[in-house]
Amino acid sequence: MAVEVAPAPGMRHTGDMPPILQVQSIDAAYGKVQILHGVSLDVYPGEVVSIIGPNGAGKSTVLKAIMGFLTPSAGEIIFDGGTITGLRTDLVVRRGIAYVPQGRIVFKDMSVVENLEMGAYAVSDKAQVRRTMEQVFQIFPRLGERPKQAAGTMSGGEQQMLAMGRALMVEPRVVLMDEPSLGLAPRFVELVFEKIGELKAGGMTLLLVEQNAVKSLSISDRGYVLELGRNRFTGPGDALLADERVRRLYLGG
Ligand SMILES: Nc1ncnc2c1ncn2[C@@H]1O[C@H](COP(=O)(O)OP(=O)(O)OP(=O)(O)O)[C@@H](O)[C@H]1O
Ligand SMILES: [Mg+2]
Image (cartoon, rainbow, N blue to C red):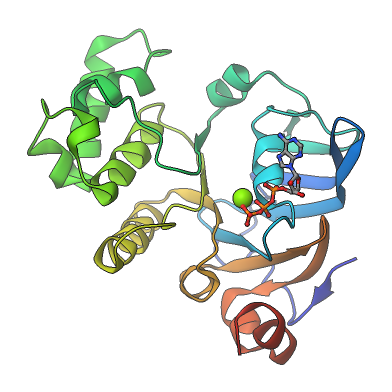
């Protein structure tokens, strides 16, 4: 089981609210190769929670299991009080979980607006789609300034903003992001973390996988360190940042 580096902050941000998302002791495999071994995590409403750990630790696999891309062979995933274990991805999205995959995947030949509309393909109320898009433009003014630009011609950082904005088009309650800052120029790395902070300030709940562990723990309420598909350390973001073992093993110092 995970080592707690400091007393759990419990529900300090959320009054008496239960977790909105709970991963309970899941095992998961690709074919015959078991990757996750009893991984657990909780996300409370309004929190930013980070998953960090070495390459191959299973961080992305946890997000994929939540999204229904693979079905755990043991354990449960609970969202908003109900099980979503093994639920089809589109139904997971409908329940209120959005996913920003690694690699800022956008439809390159489509415009900004078309990309955002694709994000809302499941929303039939056009007026609602327009309203949500206006909100996305408020968070990401850069997108609102260039509605007709083909996504493929935007910079890497702008494409990442578009990928994040598209996830918001389903009006999710929780957003999962896999390595949103990976491979971006420094100023866009800053911007990505700034935007995550703004989303949190607006009441959004985020579960973040990041190789930029220091930055991501700095903006996180809590974090989980995974290693070899197992929980290793957990605690408040600042406590993990300050923990000697975590620093030495995972933060490069
Ligand atoms: N589709 C797949 N088929 C088979 N094995 C896979 C597949 N995807 C991932 N794996 C393996 O599962 C393990 C965990 O992968 P995962 O992508 O979850 O790690 P990660 O912690 O996200 O790593 P990284 O920091 O490199 O993104 C790795 O050993 C990887 O090779
Ligand atoms: Mg990964």
